[in-house]
Amino acid sequence: MNTRLLATIQRALVRTGVELMPFIPLPAEWYRKLLVRDSEKRYATGRWEYFRDITESYRYSIIRGCCEYYKPGSPTILDVGCGEGVLQERCSYSRYVGIDMNSTAIGRAKAREDSKTEFILSSARDYTPKDVVFDVIVFNESLYYIQNPIDVLQQYRSYLASEGIVIVCMFQTYLARRIWKELHRIGLTELSYVKIVNEPGFAAIVRVYGESRPPPG
Ligand SMILES: C[S@@+](CC[C@H](N)C(=O)[O-])C[C@H]1O[C@@H](n2cnc3c(N)ncnc32)[C@H](O)[C@@H]1O
Image: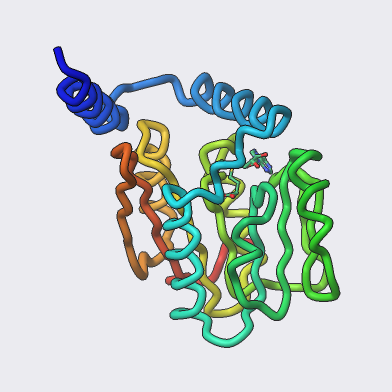
């Protein structure tokens, strides 16, 4: 069999697998732990470097575009599970706070701190902002890493400025599908929806939410 045909078959198999992934029921907590373990290993071995590649670049561009569209000018941004802060490098803001529980990621990001930019080592659950609310709160590829993601997102709604927005981006997996369903039930208004499919066939979905009623608490 020639190599081009082999590559075509391989690509077709990967695409089919990727398409089916969101429908393969996996125990949520088991899957989440697997993701967290993988993430820790990637930071330890530098294997998150591809976040700056073109295949990942689109989601940052879309999120940046959503910030510019819904909150033009210089919004205040909270980036939950910010990693090394790739999003921060691309956005305009008057204040940016990135939090992540991984010390390697935050250690690298801290090199870019200035009077408007802060990176904090904290788990999402433990972070409470000091005297500040945010125009934009972003969970970019981080919500399904967090235990009890809906409870945590509810907690963050109280850190939102009036008319603030929440941006969630997740790759399509079974866990993500479950989280999207739950997110539809907590009284947020979906303002926009974008699906990005990259070359290997992985689909990332970005949704922007606004408050349709006062946040709880
Ligand atoms: C796939 S990476 C995404 C990083 C970043 N948002 C980006 O897109 O460049 C997921 C990140 O979530 C962080 N994370 C996972 N669970 C977390 C938690 N409970 N609290 C804070 N950060 C968490 C990980 O350490 C990791 O940096």
